[in-house]
Image (tube, rainbow, N blue to C red; front, side, top):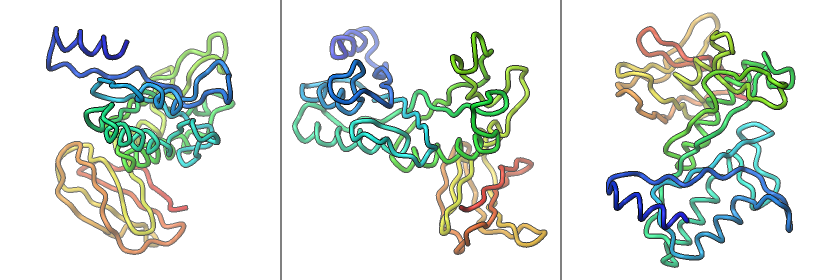
Length: 251
């Protein structure tokens, strides 16, 4: 089906980009009803396969650093399983090139409004960390699901509250993290610049902010730069003109 669709699209519009349907993060072991995503792609890529972008939905129930428990499932930090599989398929000749990876759905429900969601500030932190972890694995595009929360009809459990805006339109902290995500480790700082200009990373020092790095960036540029050794508990932020990121505390 994928090959036939790819051929038909390219005949009608040679410059079109064919994105695979997004696979789910988890399946059932053994002969369960849901096929695990890596097992599915392993079967597909045994034969000559044509597409332009590989899409996946790497939801995680344990935060952006929580690996899937089963080897053939793929959560946020497991996207490398797909790139390794594509490299293997290219060596065998069943794939003409290693394709870009898109995450076409990922999110964490927040509280408020979902009583079973994670606290709003944790959702914002996890959003930024999700982008960072996916970027490090070579993911070239991430689509957060969704922009605005759904109405809880028939219930919160049956609907999605992973938006960066509440149902009434009020922004969550994650809206700021979405626009200007910042993550810091003990040795490096990361962001995606929301605009062109002078980007400044800062560390909290007492009641003041001390400059760590200053760079000239273009809009949308991803920055991953060395910084002075940072201790656990250090607080880091970035600013660009009048824009300020949320503060990142090093765990």
